[in-house]
Figure 1: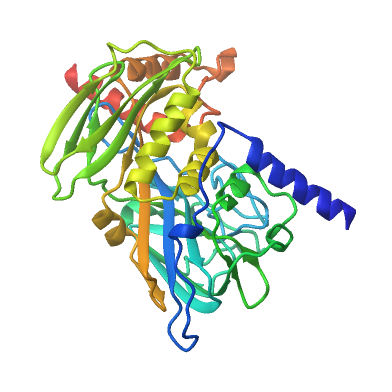
Figure 2: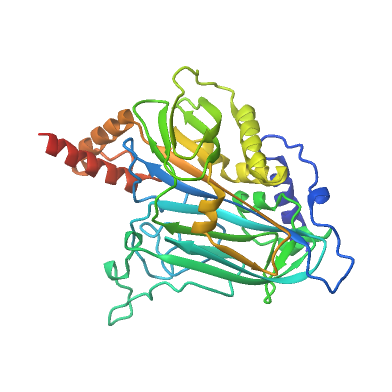
Length: 419
């Protein structure tokens, strides 16, 4: 009992103390009011946030090979056979499943319920163009990936178990859970051994508890996935700090952070309103100096963008805290943009029964963009690599090694054709 209490206190204190300070007001005033007629349908609000991560070449091509998970999930998170992180590096339960054609990594969508009522709810999420491959708590239904093929000795086969997302894939997940207001004992009810910081941060909002019939409990429904589909906007670059954003669709992209970090850990960025439908805009950070002290100002801009899109302050904080290391503490040029709600609803169709009073869904596109200069460096590094002579490829352990390899192949073909 002492160990349980101490661990819970440490986890709670860690989540409260890490990162930039927060001064968010409680969300109770904005939550659904109490139901006076208990025979009426439950009155609640649903909020969701998550990320689509992609890597765009300087010419705007979405590169495959982005399936490598950046923030490891706790061991209790559930997964499809062979689709855990990362399939090309780690074996689980004695088998591997190669994954190909992954151009989009869907990260950490979490669904919150805000209510003063207790009720049962059915949640159904689809994924057009991808697989919902990881989740918690246990689902009640959803997609079934191809079975693992084995040889006559029972050992799993290799390429025969490949899932190629470029050939098309439509996933789904369903939950049947009971929603109850979070009480004073919430920390003990949701505690699980070996939780990671990125798992704890999403608990910061004042959301209700969700519990399965088997007793799995959390303050949110969690899912992740992998896919292959075109973004509603494209990104190209002609040099350091330069990015052209084209929005050919009919829905405006409302809110962007164009961000660049150098090898010294300094950063520069621009917070813009977005790109209207049917327009193209070029942004350049070249006139901005790299700032050695940037964290709090960037955090404030991130919270402003997310809350304007509809998230509560604590939700915006939780999202930034969850992804701070991989969002902002890695070298490179990237754009964070609010995905148009129509695109989110089309790609991730959501049905909830009984329906909420209001639904807010804020998906953030995190688009890494390679500049021509960086691509030339990739060409040099890949060509100079020679393990037999002790010259290793410096990018082999990088999260985007597979995608970088694909870009090097593309550039090599272009060079050969030019000759």
